[in-house]
Image (tube, rainbow, N blue to C red):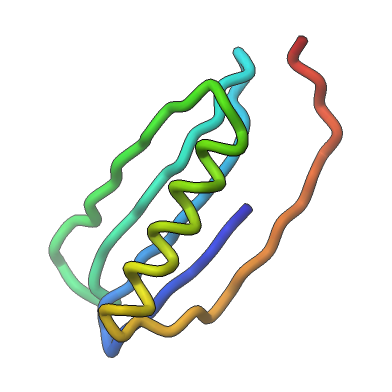
Length: 83
């Protein structure tokens, strides 16, 4: 899952994906468009998909409250099974 939020020149990209050991990772990348400052990235690892989705929903609610607009939202399931 990929969600791209933007407010003026600020952006946040949220990614939800499953890693090679089967954990779910919520990755957040924040930055300013065309800035010389580095992006800030955080990763939250969870072992439950529904908990990870709940975190993404919470982040989405927070971004809307702060005035960000969602510009891209997509999800692609590749069918890998890590069991």
